[in-house]
Amino acid sequence: MPTYNKLVRDFIPHIIESSGKTCTTRIMNDDEFITELNKKMHEELAEYETAETAEDAIEELADLLELINAAAVAHGSSFDELEKVRLQKAEKRGGFDERIYLIDVEDE
Image 1 (cartoon, helix red, strand yellow):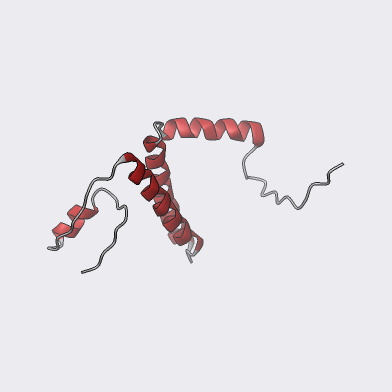
Image 2: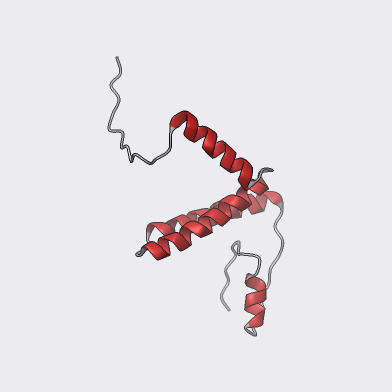
């Protein structure tokens, strides 16, 4: 019997049970949830980094986006509010469209 001990998407227990298997789950408290969200983000980021096709990369980015949305809610915000903050930062500091790679800065 495999042991996972990790955050999963909401429908995973149902999908497992629909296949004739049983699983054990529990609901995490707020602190545990944020910790597990962080772990899952690292897992999905690693999968994105090793994606071999653009299609696989998009799948992993979608997983990361879902986790980012969940993290925003867990921190008392929303994806819409997160997007507002992103746009404000882009307006003040720019985005990454120009692909600028900073080499060094000379102090005077």
